[in-house]
Length: 220
Image (cartoon, rainbow, N blue to C red; front, side, top):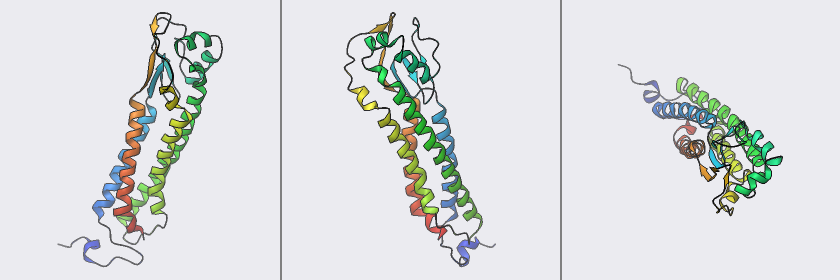
């Protein structure tokens, strides 16, 4: 029985040996991380703060007895906090009203960079598939695509964190037991969406290292 052509014969011109199991592993991992990325940005709960559960765009209140029950997006929260309910909100959560706009801008940046990263990963996965099928396939930008996906998602998370100023929320002197119409507010707390995206960045870093070590050389 004939052995695998790539193991038995010299590779065609401009190819560098690489085991197909590495290429297949990269393809499977990329597909899984694309699915994981879509799932994380789709979650409606990224963090809880004051009287709302926040996502990248969505926001809803967990208060049972309040004037805030019609909120559906961060824009709705911003409208409440900037206008008629500002004093009521800041009595419970000092300086809260400066954050909703930052949350919106940070979420928009993360979504934009994440979309670009998904496209980058799709291209990288596609070229790995082509290399899996063709021993003579060559791509000078393979290393760039492998690095670019991780870089985008890392930049997305860091930009999200610093634009939203989450670090300053933790330092706020919100120590009193405040409430809004009998409903207790909550301190800032990470939820599933934030945790998943952070885990995603770590996994993308590991995939990048794997690609640079085991598969990128196969495109030379």
